[in-house]
Image (tube, rainbow over all chains, first blue to last red; front, side):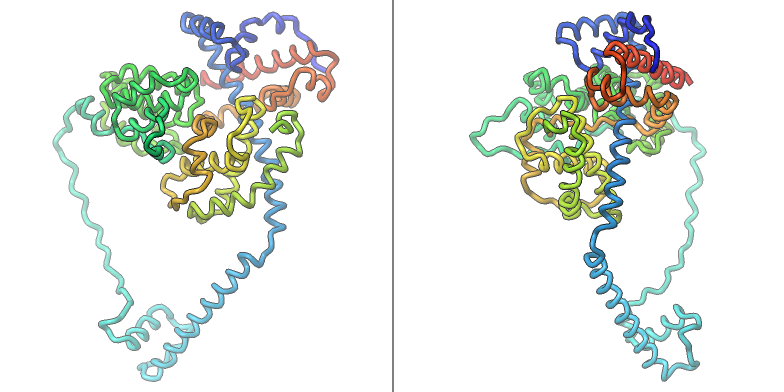
Length: 309
Length: 181
């Protein structure tokens, strides 16, 4: 049994941070605490580190559950009847044997006229190819002769020194509002009133970004506080030239680490920084993305990084 | 949901096993993959996500069936993870739930990036087993102090609270050190 440390009980900061991160504060307490965080860099850092501690516990808990489920899956897979896929395999094997028999027959049939006897054990692919050429009229041959692959010489790199790219142009060339299938809403039947959330989603999907931003402001506080929806809002802000506001939102999304778009948020934050004329900050975000093999934006980040001086 | 919230271990296991076969067949119709284990992985993640939502009381009721909810969030994960995977469009109650249910609309997969995940896993590995156990039971499985006192054999609720506080602080310090590097 571990000893009680009296100092622990006096650590009010930790208790407050815990309540804040576990959303156990009232709205007023939360707002008050967030103001304290903004005013106190040390407290802000503490909150970030405790947030990561809770994240670490979440990872541990999940791994334990996954391990438990994997054990169940092993037992279940072993108990699955073999006939389902085995039956399919049987027919596939049977079909394969038939094909071989047909090929063998053709081989024998045309082998009667061959210049030299060919045994299956000899250079089979070439021999078979020759035999099939004899068997099938040339104009209907389905064999595709090997295409000589010549490596084309890559054009010599331009000796002209590339100009410093315009940051705004880089932004414009790389920015596309983020879309995935889950954002594509079905239009409701006529006569059914759209909720503010529906209007927001629909306007966003249809690239009516000013309307999307207006609709966003009419949603409930709970929805407006969702990092996922804030990410979408940030995209609309970028699309309507409000990169500074977008950057603030994206920074918070990344710091919170809760959104399913956290990975994409870093890409869009880099673009926002470019549009805001802060390429150094953009490079930082791009370097993080470029070094993460799991990021869907790794390739994009590497390419853009080479263009941002 | 109530059984899961009360921490009955069989409830989650039953939910997992009862829906697994159906999910594999359902997902197999919608997505083409060379590795059926992809779907098993997603099913695990869906059930875990549901568990987390329930124990944290973020999810207290559902407008749809539990299996519809699980399939819907599994579907979103499949779309997210496999943008290039060929998927076949179907229309069933899961699609309806995806469009209409706020619990599903607002649901987000809460995952740190790989490099951060590795760092955090390593950090928690540096804690003693007792700290790992009490912290996970409290902050992941949302066990109450009184439950922990009984299950982990502590003398008093104060002992539990103090141990939690110290272990959490220690974990924070380990992460802080790793972060600085």
